[in-house]
Amino acid sequence: MYLLAALAAGVSVWLLWRYRQERQYRRQPYVAASETGWAAQQPAPDSPLRHRMALVGDLGAVATDGSDPVLSLLQSWLRAAGEASSVVVLGDNVYPTGIPAPTHPGRAAAEQRLDVQLDAFRTYAGRVIFLSGNHDWNKGRPDGYQYLLRQEAYVLDHLPGALYLPAKGCPGPVTLQLAEGLLLVVLNTQWWVQNGPRPLGPEFGCTATSAKEPFQQLQEILELNRHQQVVVAGHHPLYSNAMHGGKFTTKQHLFPLTAAHKKAYLPLPLLGSLFPVYRQLVGAEEDMAHPPYRKMRRRLLRVLHQFPGVIYAAGHDHNLQYFHYRQGHYLVSGSGSKTAFVQHGGKATFVHEHKGFFGLEFYQNGDVWLRTFEAGATAEAGPGAEVFRKQLVGSPGGRAATPTAAAPASSAAE
Image (cartoon, rainbow, N blue to C red; front, top):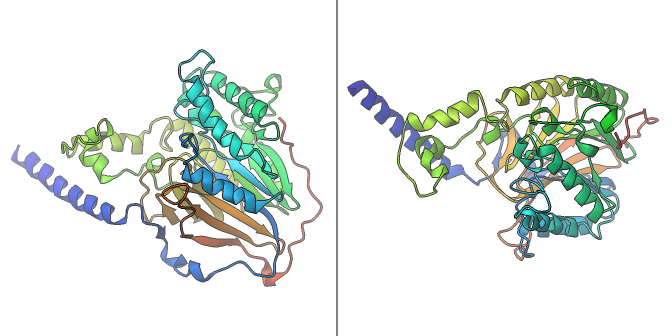
């Protein structure tokens, strides 16, 4: 008993020390030591832009009264971006459970949350591409496929110029040529972790007939398009320093009851760590550690690691994260309407617990820049200061990158 009490006391002291350290860096941007000179780097002033892309995830809890700071920031970006641009909405478009049936008591609120997003794109001249996330599939429940179909139909009915990819809940991949030498590839990552019915095969309009085939198709697409710059988009991240990647705050270990009530500060050292440790090792269905997610991630990375320079963009975790790993670029842009803890360091080059989104800028000389767009405290406050940018691809000697003849790729309609 004395030994257990001493162990509990020691763990409590250590957790309190960690908690104090986290309090000092939480909500502060983290930039790896290798990128401390980022602010002095700028795109070449004499190279025109070829295409701009906004990557916005987890907009599902935006304010519907016109006061939302991220929507205000996004609309400013849309006005500046013009026709040669695109917006990829990375899923979790309606919290908490997507679009329920018309008779459901939550239907009106769900429509309102989606309407305010669609209204933001009403006069936009570029391309709008919606993906789905776990919340859009009724949080992965067995009836989630019907929720997905309702949301897709609603988006296409109310914003006819938009795309909802992959269509009809298919796993993908599907491709969309955004500009000369720039290809978007979309995967429905929720398909691999979804419970209940999932579309598969030509009877549903899907090109894949097995759970493995989409990865083979992705491999073929990337092989055929090595001459292009490629962005692969899916809802689920492949690297993350946040909750779905198994990273939890000290508070969640020491005061686990605050998950149920924010003022329930009853310290439960050791016992309180059971739930975070379970999610790190086994995982809830939306976590990287969960077996179906882990298998999907492993297969996807096995393909992407073969293609240096490919950019993979996701949402899901409610923060901004950038990883440059094994010559690939991995983004988490899931703070469209919520924020959550993200741990500094590790494999990450940049992380920030802040509302906003990432942008990609593609230049005529072949350069590709990552930009960080963060919202102020209110819609009226405007954007915050840029806290990170990075050149992801640089043209050798400043020469223009001239794509070769386009190789065939699958179309955006499965």
